[in-house]
Image 1: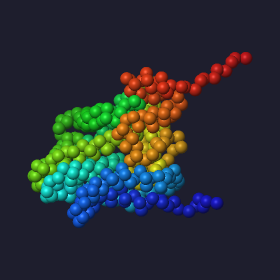
Image 2: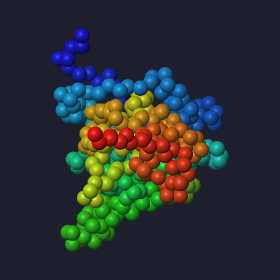
Image 3: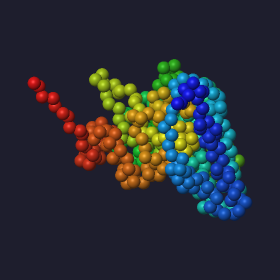
Image 4: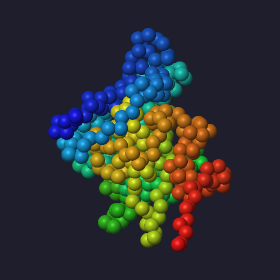
Length: 391
């Protein structure tokens, strides 16, 4: 018999710092290259995340366990988790600067430049994920940590856009960060990336206009954070030279695309229905795709428990729960990213799952208009309504 009176122990507690330590993978790769002269070491970061992690995930499997309700207040207030996330900030900047130093001081080779840039982009994606997590807290310390996690990759607008835009409009046509069924990843990014910045700017512009202030006020978080990014990139260029400009810009773009990959898979084809008053129903667990794969959840601060995240946006990562009613991805995020980047594979895997989630009634799915007819012909098989005859 289980002892329900025993204090809850988070079995992943001491694994959470792994999400921040991995920010140093590019530094390890450079160090190993310097020691051995083998260029392959510079590719350590992408090889680890996309060549090794998918296999490790299979070995470790899934974890559907949840912390008991009575344990959540203690977990929430445990500063170990807070500082586990914060500790990544100096590490991601160390990795970013070391990459710039390596490019600026080593004899130029195209392979080394590309590998170092890709590694920085993937590390930056981890920085954005940490910024997303701490950016949901309301205290000034967390907000400032989020600011510099996000500004590293030119995404200083994300906290505003995500908290006040995406979380409000998720799984509706109004949300630029919700992907339509039948829309490939590359089409999605064309409206998701510029749409996010535009939405964040308009949110801050509206807020400041109510106070009688200009959108270009330093109170505008989007404006201020954009200036911080430009200042950092300018200072790095002045110190290391023009040779690092492509490194800075392309690494930031890759980081942004990695964040877009997460947005793409998290709500693909899912849609909230409208009530009679014209407002959308409340966000429910079935409006987000989830994955309980242990390895990627640890690496991403439980980002994959996305349903609970949307239901309780301020609930910290260590407290997020699994819902049986939430649709489940067939693999963790790193594997699903690879599928998303190859549209035929993505559609083959995910479109049947969307149809299954809708019970065959594709009127409930969020579908790209130009693909609607083809998707209905293939998947629209609603369960017949049984009529009850009057006696």
